[in-house]
Length: 337
Ligand code: A3P
Image (cartoon, rainbow, N blue to C red; front, side, top):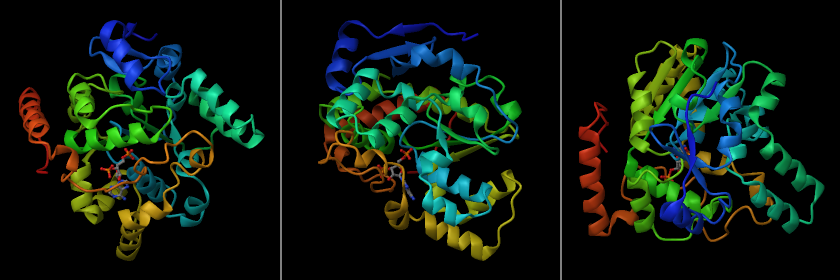
């Protein structure tokens, strides 16, 4: 049974969130004592996701949004599928790697509006239907090994997850995560963020951005970093030493790769190539109304730091203070960034 209480975010916070995140028409909930902020629709599915039937050969990536999840998905899928570049180039990443709980991101009202905007075009309806079908319905028919990605924190996942299958966790520094999520929230009409970065950062600090609290998310991963079925990475480490970390993942997945194969894979995953090849938004970007045309793309800079959003000294100082104080309450050791 799902063990946590789910409460609608009401009052001033609730009103403000609905105004600021125009695509999230049903509003937000908070889950359990850690107050995970999630789209309201999550409440309808929480128990089914929590009790999802796992298989021993499932492979999972868990990350707070914008931590490099898609990059890691491609990496894991290719290693786990004997470097099948042919299938990877033909099949969108979200079809090879199912998004656990995507349907909660898109409110019913939003999907109805998109359908209407596209005159109920059958091709569009097919994509929208697929978005709306929960993985706990489609999962049983999926061929093994199944690959799943989620932004849910570990404590909202099936409790037997780590004792059943392999899980990779990816963490990234909060400054880059917040800037990247801010831009994604402007890009996707399902979120459609309405204000500036200063306001966004204020909400991030208050744990009111989806999938927050950020620190708890990472702490839950960090605490399990020595579990044999669990591999914890920092985005920053991956970026600095992709080759070495590919080797680490091979060992974790019991796969062998030659030096040349590692070289080819690292090249395939390089941001300049991945930006061209990544299929994460290939389907929705063809649908009228799902993407805000003026916003930055899904694969953006792929760098550590240097985001202009922190050029404002006031935000920068405030964020650094928050970072130091929050980090001091944990035992997480971030790589330098
Ligand atoms: P930026 O917006 O800072 O560039 P997610 O997949 O979890 O949504 O994460 C997206 C972030 O990962 C984006 O960060 C994106 O540019 C970055 N990213 C994607 N592919 C990458 C790659 N091949 N190398 C480095 N960073 C990558």
